[in-house]
Image (cartoon, rainbow, N blue to C red; front, side):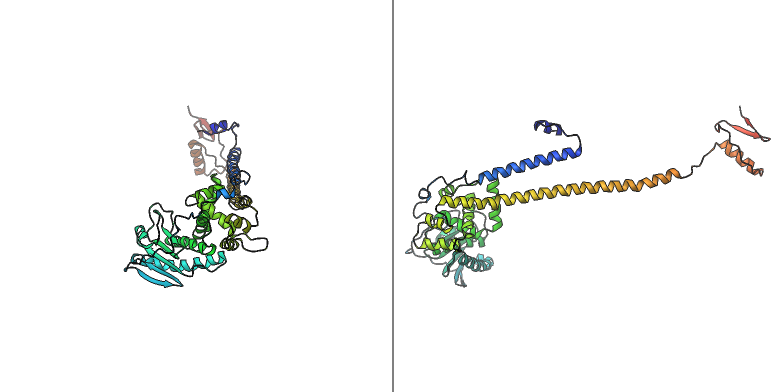
Length: 407
């Protein structure tokens, strides 16, 4: 499409100068950016995404668990470890792993210790003091080393009744992309939350807490910005109904956990340890979650959380984008100014050279006849000035002091 067609489609008259055309396209880019910002803010507006269902109707059935943290009877026998597996204890955590995972087991030692320290700080209670970690060579072996069922497509499984984590050194097809250390952190988070709450947290909060623990802040921030800008923000009812297993809902559930973990009551008590303690005391989850952030209902909590999302994932990226745009425009203007100054300096430097060339004396060249006459007069010793005829193109000769025209 030609430029004049672009202007015609926008219903505007085509600008005539380069500066006007540049300003036109800058304005159009600004309109598109502002339109995207408005759409994102509309999606994050708590009035438009209000909690449509009652809290009681949103709670999953009793006993619902994440697929990677299933229930297993405490009476179920723990399968023995194959004889070829290597067993080692590190800082209170017993590891059993296939020899093929020997080179990767070192990173799991550091991950287990750092994750346990972080979980104790967040939950406000000692957790993960007696944990078994089994690392298999392939996903198919996970079921043989687990006291319960292991869902297909999971790279890790946590069994709170036995304090057991079963990992596969090779992730199964279809599993979310994660490193072995991230899988271990994810499973340990399930165990720690069960230990701190008495296994009373719903599945969606379980998965959000594990995702919040295992994924980095940059990953969560990128996912939440993408959800907001693409208009995919979900209500709390939608997150609860899907159990937040995979896809964007788990990142939103993780962000809700982030919001709770960063909140405090009016008395100054951290919200997440308060939530875990009340759940362990038998307080219903909906009431415990709302009161942990000093709200009366889940709907009020959701509105407060969405305000936090808007500040964190909408306004900040918009400000960064606008700042980058302003810096780009300023840089372009400075480049144009430097270019024009360079051209002006070059023109000013060339002007004196032209003046010197114009003021230099010009040599008048006569015809060959005049030159020959001059040489002849000089040969006779005549020092008088030589009279140059007005029309040097007509052949003339000098004879006895008189000029004669040749015919």
